Picture 1 (cartoon, helix red, strand yellow):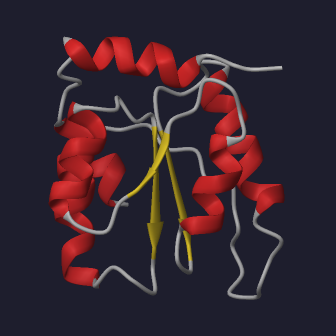
Picture 2: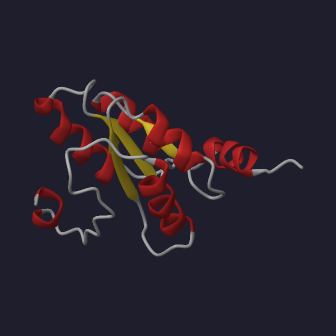
Length: 126
């Protein structure tokens, strides 16, 4: 697996079937594990990636971004300190997947003015 070749520890939460699944049942446990600090980051895949990102972002402490190209991945890390990445396999050409992953995994959070914004994002309302 490419991620392990790059030196990352990988835990696969499923699915191992090409059959349609109720993706919230798979995505939520990944997001919860990231929120608990069991994993530094999480990567989730779906058809468009939209529903997966929505489910992940319902978990407090998760900032899941939907990336479709290298620039969206770069800014997700630089400005938003995204700790989860959602990719839609129907929308991202295979030849762009590896560069997106590389950039998202290696780009550091820029901090500065973005830290204030992250705190504002993480505020909960009742």
